[in-house]
Length: 206
Ligand code: HEM
Ligand code: HEM
Image (cartoon, rainbow, N blue to C red; front, side, top):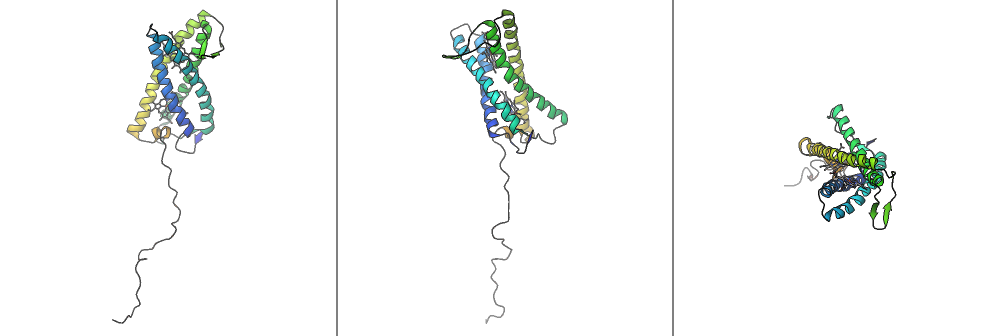
């Protein structure tokens, strides 16, 4: 759906930046987690699980909001191919925002590990205990995370190209938004040139 405003809905913009920060944090926590055998591993895993599930909850809120409020039209001078690439890359970003947390949850379920979100709250398993499925999903989680990182870098490059080189308002549509266009009506009192000239009677005595 094309949105009449030049900007994304303010709530969508807020969720975009919140999720961007969370996703980048998750990628670094994930890599940090698998590169350590020290006590930091458990701390990082304890952060990784609830943050990943929070991303899943946020995208479940974000997608219906996006479908309901639409997106501003892309600049007219972009070719059809460029517009399609932008659309496809956004679709892939959304798909991965769903897939990666679900793969993480499914992988722990298949491995027989509890998916502890907080101390008192553990999610139910979404897959049966099966080490073959666990091994497959463990590899899938790594591959999808690496591809996601590459997609985000491309997305970042495209956003910066719009914001710094083309300066076409696309970056603004997801950040501070465009300034409202001033609606100009007739001024209260119309001044005509010469209004301040006081006419004097023609034949005043000298
Ligand atoms: C957007 C969400 C997520 C991102 C970006 C993400 C990213 C990552 C990354 C980059 C790794 C390291 C992969 C490697 O080098 O092999 C990883 C590992 C892992 N992730 Fe995620 N993840 C997400 C969601 C989840 C969720 C929701 C769970 C579980 C509920 C989860 C559980 C795990 C586990 C158990 C590991 C492996 C730990 C190990 O083998 O020591 N992830 N994740
Ligand atoms: C780190 C993870 C990020 C994710 C997961 C992400 C995800 C997304 C998604 C799914 C959209 C499509 C919006 C929609 O149609 O609802 C989008 C749009 C956008 N994002 Fe990101 N984003 C991330 C980071 C960034 C960064 C770092 C920037 C800027 C430097 C950025 C700038 C933009 C802009 C300008 C748009 C609007 C593009 C357009 O209308 O074509 N994003 N992002």
